[in-house]
Length: 114
Image 1 (cartoon, rainbow, N blue to C red):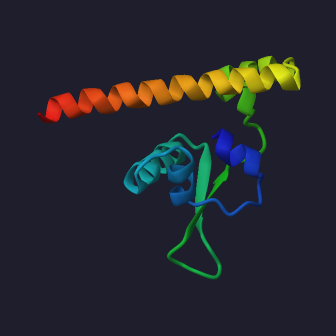
Image 2 (image 1 turned 180 degrees about the horizontal axis):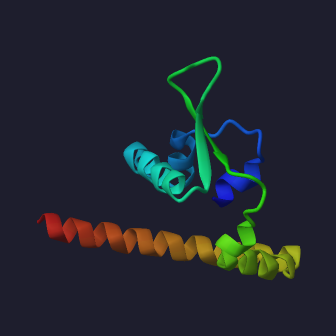
């Protein structure tokens, strides 16, 4: 929902774009849009130029991204309090953590395949 809300009411957002942003397979993106549609949070319409292309939009303007995703809202507030120098230190640390976790995951996967 935040992805859709941040793009605005006139953006042409597809299920494929949502899936890519969330690092999901295309069928999972479509399933996610289907669940949002079933809950009445979005509408899906055909693109005027390409009938195969389906555009997903948020229903109305009553949805508040901060209510849907309070963790991201809080993390953005924490980020806003960091100096530029501190933000670089934190970003470097988090990049090292990600590399370490990725390597550990790859090593564990390699052991399973043996």
